[in-house]
Amino acid sequence: MSLLARTRPDLAAFQPYVSARKTGLDGRIRLNANESPWAGDGATFGTNRYPDPQPALLRARLAALYGVPESRLWIGRGSDEPIDLLLRAFCRAGRDNIVATAPTFGMYRIGAQVQGAAYRAHSLPAAQNFALDPERLLALTDADTKIVFVCSPNNPTGTLHHAALGFLAERLAGRALLLVDEAYIEFAEVPSATALIDRHDNVAVLRTLSKAHALAGARIGTLIAREEIAAFVARLAAPYPLPSPCVALALEALQPAALEHTRRRIAMLIAERTRVARELATLADVRTIWPSSANFVLARFGDGEAALSRALAAGIVLRDVSAQDGLDDCLRITIGAPEENDALIDTLFAPSPPTASSSGERAGVRGRGVNRLQDFGAAGTPPPHPTLSPGFAGGEGKTAEPSP
Ligand SMILES: *Cc1c(COP(=O)(O)O)cnc(C)c1O
Figure 1 (cartoon, rainbow, N blue to C red):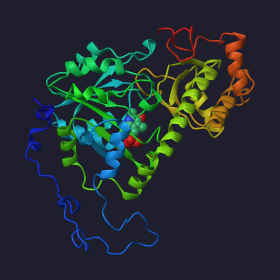
Figure 2 (figure 1 turned 90 degrees about the vertical axis):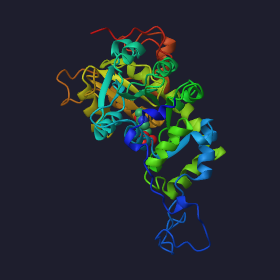
Figure 3 (figure 1 turned 90 degrees about the horizontal axis):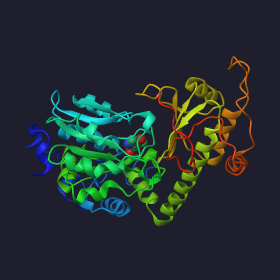
Figure 4 (figure 1 turned 180 degrees about the horizontal axis):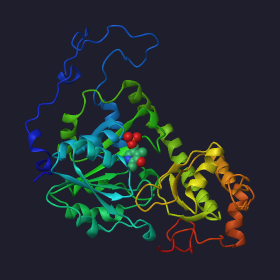
């Protein structure tokens, strides 16, 4: 039985909108879509015409990039769009539920709420590096569970959960879609979960050009799933999800030379991630930095709010995630360009401004980036606090966050 049997029964006979482009008719003179016959001032990309709903060349390039058959793709306005459409496709309002981890990306809950699906959260314990417990997660599922979301690497923790996916797919077979959000997979050293789709018809994967490919502004996200699921999502989608200028930008970003640049940027961000984590770990006010497989690190501060406003006063914006389950005093820090990371480190290491701290104590002023990193390794001086969790890349031998 295909997992399509688990989609909403009221959509079974659903007739999608047939746009002018979808009729497949084309000719010298197009008078079938109420478009302007003239390009507007300064227009490029033929934007007076409606775009191809799923441009063949972009499909081919993305299929090659992700190493999957084209028939398994549906490209949308960022991966946020397939998240929304899958919730609509599978969840009966007021009856069905979805399961996700906590903490995780907030859009799963929003999408579930908009669709009227109940949201069940599997808590990931900070004291155990946010490890996912597959049996405990599965215990939250029931006959009305339609989608299990696993974000891996997870936002905002940076944790990789790929090891659990095969087992989860097996146990959810015929019942629920295992939706693996791989927005940050380029920064991790594991193969994509797309390989699971051959064996498990209930696995779907989300990829995006927003992060590693530097195209957040173009909104190009891809659902990779069995053909019948990708086709079902396509039927629900708005007729023209992909603006032609965005498609053109995506095609440029997928040229071989651009992909080579992307690979270099990824390598630099991974190296910077290690450096930033090591540097921050030596800060007196940093309690824990968790291992990250993404382009950010999650850090727990003694006083998260103080660190946040201190950075902000220097014009550096960090993400406050302290409102999420178990993340008191935690900030998510995106890895920036080396000079941006230096600015953050310098700001947090600078002596406390007299107005901001009661003690006026120096957090510790150190040399610049590279020297500091060498000090850390060569001098063999342990950081002042046990801040690096086990498994942290390059942080061997540091103790975990003490249990509360
Ligand atoms: C950034 C992010 C996305 C990407 O969304 P787009 O709509 O493709 O920009 C998806 N999932 C997670 C977990 C993210 O952090």
